[in-house]
Image (tube, rainbow over all chains, first blue to last red; front, side):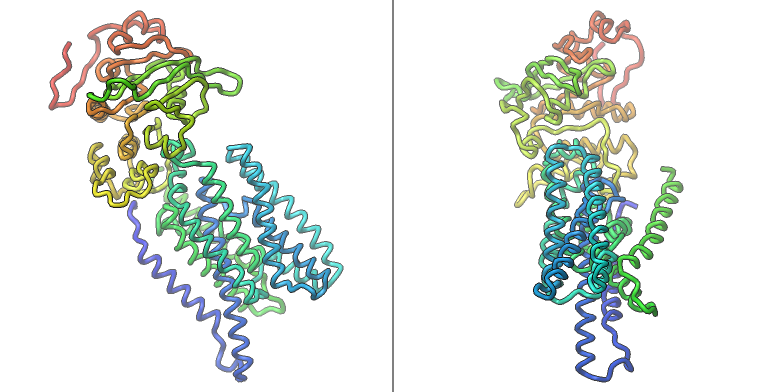
Length: 329
Length: 259
């Protein structure tokens, strides 16, 4: 099927998004009778919902462009190493906030730490990309960076164990959670996500050309190193925004663009917005499930996206394989 | 062919290409004029693909390659793409883009065509006879149809120089003949067309001139009927050339070539 119609896909996505929003804000009739408490709860839930939707949208959009730049539908934003960089930055920020007591507000310093960590990781990555045009080298550098940052993050977590409160915060952050996202975090991330989405949309056409391979894209006029540089940069900004809102949320950037291609086509521009909406829906839904499961502690969001995402991803892979067999490809 | 007068569309002087420490192309010089179809010939491994990729500015090279008087390596990717259209042997595209989207990529280097009333994409599709395929997915096409889409993509760019690497390799006899007729037509309307060819009889029939490569160096060049002669063919390919042997084909509406 060569032709795809985007209308129904948009329709379904928007309806599901609306349902998830209603579900996320729903306060049962018997739950709270006090008007003031009810308002406070609603505002908390609205912030949490906004954080989930924004983080999901950012990760899914970053997934679209990273998969384009690596010409691999199985790549995810985390292959750049910037997710691990942002997570480490956030953890360092939490530790600093802990060390200085309440002198600095974690709600401010954590997003800054994430952005700084992501940009630092990106800087290291791009200094390697400058000396090599090899895609595999880029991939390996990202992988090594991620490993180093995760090891450092593990070390920080072990340090944070000394203090019970701090240890909890650092671990919750690395497991992924939008429960503690505040209004200021949302307001910090919002422009990053909006600019990131617009920038990724602008790079969509050269990414489409890159689908044919580097040499063909170059012959058609694409400045391949420049495209890689900017796409990696904007993907990192999106990742930093997502991590600052919800810590380490797994699987979204990988699975969402992959799941949407059969419905909206492979063109990056047509894939970007539906992916962003679907990413928001996916994370908000996972957060809703995580919240709704009766348990003494909440299931971490990053765990939930992985638990829901992995089987979904497997199903997609099997379907793709079956279609290949049926079509004789 | 009026403007073919002074400046050749492409002038390559002593082009060298290294792969690692090996020199895979040694001091190849050639020129291709506007209005001319130039065949690049040679056995497997002679360096034909390497040569045309260097000429298209897609490989780092030594020596000089000038397109309309400008060194190719000094051009930005977009400037280069506006002057040279390159058709690879086979596309790396394995994604389900629509045919019209693939052909539109040929216009990328020109930027958005504001106020442009012409339809170069539609025209290019019509030229290769695929206008009814516009909304089909590229991956559902046969290899031969895909090759014609690539040709249309190159035509959509409307560049003065066309470089094609064995464009007819996956095509059946009819589509090969149509492609060569199309390339001849483009040359006659003033474009410079440089084609890597495998079939010597095609080269003799459709190309104005030919260059013959052997082991990464230029063996001989000149009018195709002079380059493809028993001595050179025996030396380069190690086979004997028998004139007037074998089958010959032509499109139904065209008279067979003179004997």
